[in-house]
Structure formats: C-alpha cells, structure tokens
Length: 336
Length: 130
Image 1 (cartoon, each protein chain N blue to C red):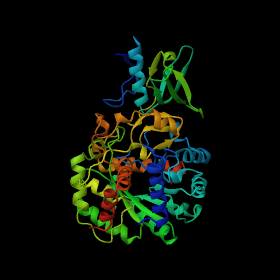
Image 2: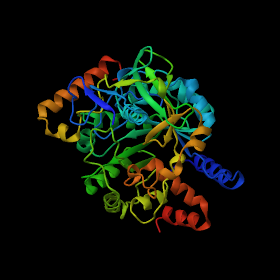
Image 3: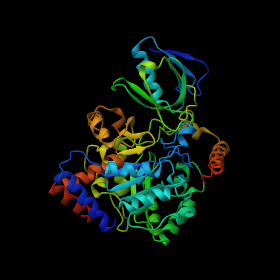
Image 4: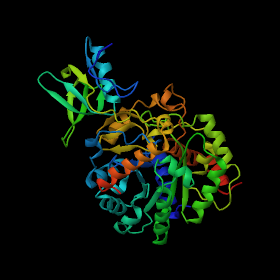
C-alpha cells in the first residue's frame, strides 16, 4: 500500500482539480523522460529507436524542474531510457523531493545497487523496478541473460536500506498466467511495497509486433491472473484499474492524465503515441485534438490499448467522480 | 505521390532508408514530411541554399507558416524550418527501428542471439552505462 500521506495528497489534489477548480482535464502523473538512452534493448520497447546524437541528449535538472512546476501533477514517473544512466539523476531526484513530488524512478536495476549511495530513502522516492516475470520470462523479454538476478539483488539491497521499492511488469501475448502468479509470490517475498501491471502497447517502432495483446486477450489474461488473488499480493494500482484489466469495468482513456515531457518537448497526445510536440503544457492541453484519441475514437492506434498510463487516471477519476465510484473502490480494496 | 528515388537498397522491405523524395506538388511535400517525421533515423533536408542533416522530431502542418523541427547533428538546440523551404528529403541515416523484428530475433540461431546480446552489452559497457 502507498503511504497514507501520498494517498491523502493525491486524493486532495484530484478533489481540488475536479470540484474546486472545475478543471475538465488535469494531470495526475508526469512522465518525465530525461533521456532515451538505455543499457538494454528489449524487444517490446519502442522508446529507444533513435540516432546516436539523439540518444546522447539529456534534459538538464533545471529543465526537469521547470516541466514539473509547469505541469503541477503530484506524482512524477521517471522512465526513459534508463534514468540511472543520466549523470545528474541524483540532482533531479533531490530537486523533486524538495518540491514534495512523489517520484517513481523506473529502472531495469542494472545500475541500481551501484548507484544507491546517490540517493536518500524518502517517502517521496520509490524505485520502480522493471520485472517482466520469473527469471526465464524476464531475461527473454529484455533479451539478456542474467538481468533478473541482478535486479533481484538490487531490490533486496534497496529494501534493506529503507527505500520504497515497487515492481513494474508489462505482460505480452503468450504470457503464462500461472507463472505470473508465481512471480507475484516471489516479488512479495522480496519485500516490495507493491506491484504495477500493464499490458504492453503496440509501439509502431518496437521490434516485437507479434506479441502484443489485443483487448479481449488482455481481459482474458488478466482475469486468469487476478480473479483469485492471494491475500498477500499488494498492487500499486487503483483497484478499479485492476477490475478494468479483467473486463469488469469499462473506461475511456485519459491521455492527459499522464502527460509526457522529454528532450523534444510536451508529447502529443500521450506517453505512447507521438503525434508531435509543443513547447508548453498549456499548449499541450489546449492544442491537442483530444477527440481523435481513445477507444471510442476511430483512431486505430488506440483500439487495443489498455495501458496503465491512459487508464489508471481514468480509474482514479472514477473513484473520485461519484459516491458510487468511491464505494466501488472501497469495496474492491477490501476484496469484497 | 512524391517521387521516390532509391539511391541505394533499403535495409528492410518497408524501410525508407536510402529513399529520396522530390516534390511535384504541395501534397507531395506534406506527404514526404509526414514520412520523415515518422522515420526513426536522420534525414537530409535540401533547402533553397543549403542542406541540413538531422532528426526530424516534429512537424506542424497547421502552424502559420507550416514548419518542421529538426535536431541537426551536433546542434544543441532544434532548428525550425518552414515547409516551403524544403525542396527534397533524403532518408540518409540508419533506420534504427528497422530489421529488428521479433520474428527475426526468434529465427536467429541461439549463438547469433547470444552474439547480438553480447554486442549490445559490450556497447553499453564501453559507454559506461553498465
């Protein structure tokens, strides 16, 4: 479970945006990509296919702080690329902690153990470690043997030192539900705070185009995995998002809920699609043709998407959008 | 359709790597710019008085005037170029998204996959990223 202070911050932020400020569109999590360079080349990833001179570019700490201030979201996810490659990642994290932002630093953990000394444990900082399954599945997904073992060692060390640690798992077609359940058991024994799950997105530029899930496959897979959850499993996700993944609830995408900022600017319309960039967050909200995106639109790029960054904000919005949504969340949280 | 003059073979069946587009009409120019925007490699833009090689990361056909944004090789800041100044586009850089399909990865022999994984690991180590 997330700390009460974080839950309170997010709840009060959402209620303020919705009811006091009356904003139709507001961000929940800023996806801050300080670089695209990675030290892995996973077959399911469409984020790293750029020329070298682009991969060598970095956001400066000040650019990161400016984007965070401009966006105003209470949570900041730092994906990439591999953020721990960034030479100033410690300065970026320290600056965001100072601004009281809840940070999820997404990492494959290959450098985590070595770089832990750069960071101080904080309620505001969570290492979100990329783990795509048990040893064999994970090493296959990231196309390098030995990666799972390195990540497990890093998780243990980070937990031992008092850091908040979660895992983030992307599931693709052909995933064995029983193996995923065993994987959850193993992650719980490591002492992680919670697990994040998402179906993969069919990046046009990802080398792996055959193993992404279509919508009905996604629901069937997650139903098999989650319909009989063990009591000790902890997820770092909204209960309503977990129900959505199993097909028990339907949401429309909320692409502005997780806006992305990187070396190119504010990415339209979301973290996954690249339909262009704008200079300011205000332009992002005002100039994006929102009707052109989401499952109900005619955009083929959105039809199979059930990815976390688009639908977790929808689930949070549903929780705070009505009394029934709130009660539904409470009921799902208690496992009723 | 823009004229597609292949100067050398593409590295893949669908890649535009090596293609050169010249324009017969404004529609040709817009179409070629869209392809360049979608391309995950450097392109060379022929302008009225110069050539610019770099990565085209943005295009805005609705701006006044319509424009693209390019990170030229070695430049810290992006360059803004009006559509109207572009007279040809060559897909000169390696298509970084091409030739790496999952099917290709699976179809490789085990020792080839291992060699590729080792090469990527060695490159990351050489750059100080591991």
